[in-house]
Length: 463
View 1 (tube, helix red, strand yellow):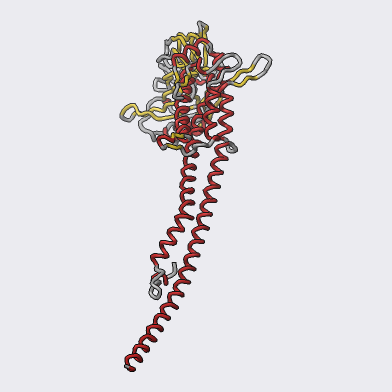
View 2 (tube, rainbow, N blue to C red):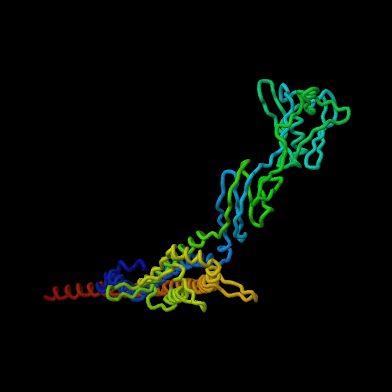
């Protein structure tokens, strides 16, 4: 408002700054405030749509899991022990078998004779030490200045993919070169040899009780694993056997072990998802009920009261969940129930009973099935997933509603700016005009006062 507003009324005593402010406040209440109220309501709708979109996404997550056939391919293994551990990939055959008479596969471990320090030399001259393992030979050249540490590093550099070399201190001034194969199995046996005319010290030559009692000794002999599978003798180079049964890995952990293994369908994973489904459904529908509430007697009205688009979401979801397929199957037979208040319940005992009696039928009803002729029939959760996708996808209902809400909010803010600008311009003009009128009236009042004084003076002088 122009600065001259404060001077209004000096001449006329009719139009004052307070009157101008009251007039503008009345126009603001009639023109701008209704738009502000619409903006506030639209912001509330936008927040409600965000929440609804999130809850639909959570519900869809459970539905998608139950429609995915991989959920029904998960396996549970029973019978694992300290001696044998078995794991099974999804989709592996449901079966049982016995494992007995386990013998662990071992690595090859060699230990040299004793050196006085890590810097002690390994030879009095030059030559080549050869290390053979698993059909490969690695050559390490040495000289009279090559130390025990130098030889260790040379082995790790050249044969490190197959062997680990380390130095072990066993006592004061007693250091041993230790060679360990990286893998287990009889093929992993490590052997050392010196070149013709080589000068390696006896501590690095083959041990012999009579001729070289200070030489390299085998601390552990490389060997294959063995066990009996359903009474059949099996040997492998590794303690982890994954090529005996498709999708199943048998890990040998101790010698002399035995156990009975059972591989079954993981029903817990499915029942957990069913429980999640009930929880997410109840959370979603509770919010939908509150958003579309129309309790006029108690003065409670939801943000989307009367919005049939929002109301139809619960109606369509519930209709599908309570439907029955052509074979007479419904979710009610699998522990899913809807109370009079619309709350979904999941009874695990009912689900477990149905699952144990007909796991194949349950999977077909939930996830779908393919007939012998190759015809695919969608499961109930597949259909429900498609319905939810029409709500939550990038081109779905919620995306359109959120985009529409953003557009409406932007339009209201622009309308509010225009209305406020028009009011400001109107009252700035009004203030300027009345300030000018006030100045004219003040001037006329001053002139009249001066004339009155002159008339009074003349009248007094005549008397």
